[in-house]
Length: 353
Image 1 (cartoon, rainbow, N blue to C red):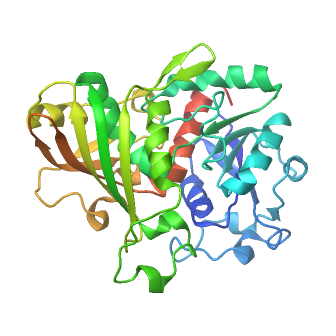
Image 2 (cartoon, rainbow, N blue to C red; image 1 turned 90 degrees about the vertical axis):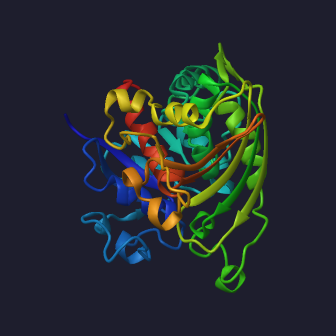
């Protein structure tokens, strides 16, 4: 079949570059337009960006002209855009993404601006694909011809992929999580080297609030025109560490019943969702990979498992009241661009694009 024509918004940033890297040669999608800030508009992409993901950016993407981020520019790019992937900063996404949806564009956004709105799906495809039914509510309520679907915060995606199977098979009362988050999560210029080298920064603005709120919506039940949030308490402590890619999270989970380590392993290893059943191009064969070594997972060793689309769990321990484990995920792939592209693949299979 003909490839779906896509645009990438905010294409010069780290997440925007990761979108282009994952979309290059994609069997379902073809990038036909890129947008960036006004200083880049009118330039060829290869002249407007400092490519950070290898020796050279994928051809022929480098010759695309950078457009302004607007419906008018996307309409006039010479190709009909079927789907938009957004790596915009939230301050810009808050205004631009609804404007695009109103004008008929179908948007999958990595930005946080609209995630918690009642009629905006917040989706991890293996966890809550049924929430995409909110698209119909959104269009009817807002009069949009297009729609906006959002991808979660990077730490949320990594954590929630492990919470879903455990919640379904064992039950969860409470979750405490401490994150050790890579510097790429803040963007190329987000954390000065003199601040992070030989250091750990025990605060990331807004991160703990996202990690405590978003899983409740994702794990909630769709009820007519809204999601009933999961009855689950999540407490988070977020830290920035001197690692390039890969968020490591230390999880303390209070189950509804006593369990043994082997049961937890079996539940996690056996987890799969709709993307695996449909064999979507970017779907990992196993969304959750369990390691038995006492010193795994590690960012440098495990962030590329399943092309960065799986999360890796290790150090599983059980006591009478708690399940404890470590989980690692690639924050710019599974936690950002990769999850958004997987949403896009699912939308195509569902006939919504």
